[in-house]
Image 1 (cartoon, one colour):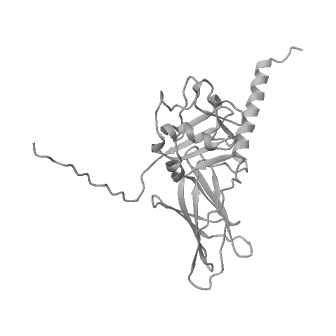
Image 2: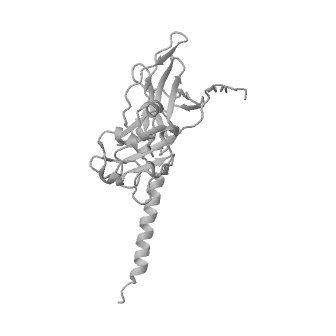
Length: 272
């Protein structure tokens, strides 16, 4: 009995594997992370004083810098989510029938899902409760170990040379790498040539040494043009790639709805 040709059998096996992977992606119940190298998320749950979920609550997200507003509604478990939002300062407002309105100020970093869980008090009268305290940001949506520098921190941290690579040194586990004059930092013992630098989601690495493409020879952008910086020491999420070093992500400054007054310039004129 002649042996069955091997090539058609292999084609059939690979076709079945490919079909299985496509079906797994379609019916997969796992939620996909919506963060990227230029944005973050805000997610949480809304509950009553006893901890029971409030379905159908109206959640409003306002960007304090630009004034833009987004809205969402909690589902049957009281959960809501704002995905792919720009890093910055936001105000979360929640309203529901029979409950007092609650507000919470929160800061969003790059590649992070910031949790804002609120409990609404039963409404005795028309009243708004504002939560002004900002608790520490704890990442519960993924395994990323990250350090975020807010716009105020980027503007006020002393940065000799105004180089972008300087911010990497502020992250835990980072040490200055002075060998061969590279000037970049190694994190947790991993070489500086294993780091990935991005600006607005685009790679900003030197193509020859894989170092940050800034400094005295390759200055592409200075710290004055950066709004937010985030250092991820372990790129576990799907948006991070490249090698095993730190992922340093920068988002450049953008316009706001704040009025900036230009100072007048006076020139002294002398008669010739």
